[in-house]
Image (cartoon, rainbow, N blue to C red; front, side, top):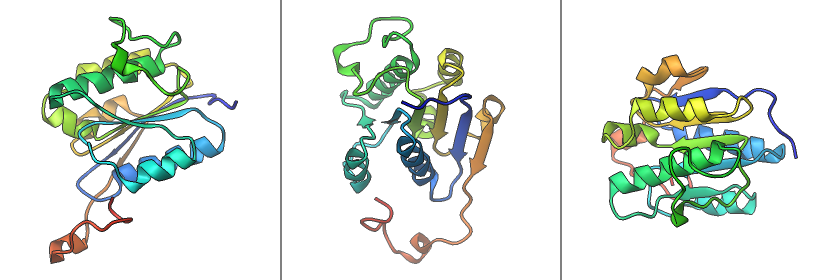
Length: 181
């Protein structure tokens, strides 16, 4: 299997459309090269067509299963620590049974989708992200998506801000199947 020589930290943020889509594009490209990719989704609890497409390519996307949003965020961060660890266990504690991963660890590319919303709600802190970056092997790419991540720019090697210039949502067109979800 292929591995990265150098892993970086990327952030896709802003109020515009395309943060998760950009991360998915990166994930599909990396999977195509044989890299071990894992996407962990905060906040999202819906099954979307991207999950079906990802499964066809062997790209695991995991959503939290715990009862409360705070517990869901904690579960995702536990999984993130497991994903970057060499021995497949969390740093501070043994992982709970619902934190098992469908891929070998450490992963080559780890995507934390909508971590910005988890941070806005106070479920994930800057310190949590700093700890994850410190745990991350030098050969693991870490991608963070979500609004409000600009304050983490100093922790990243690449920051892309999606900015809305014009959007059909403003004309009342709601999310469309196959395009926005």
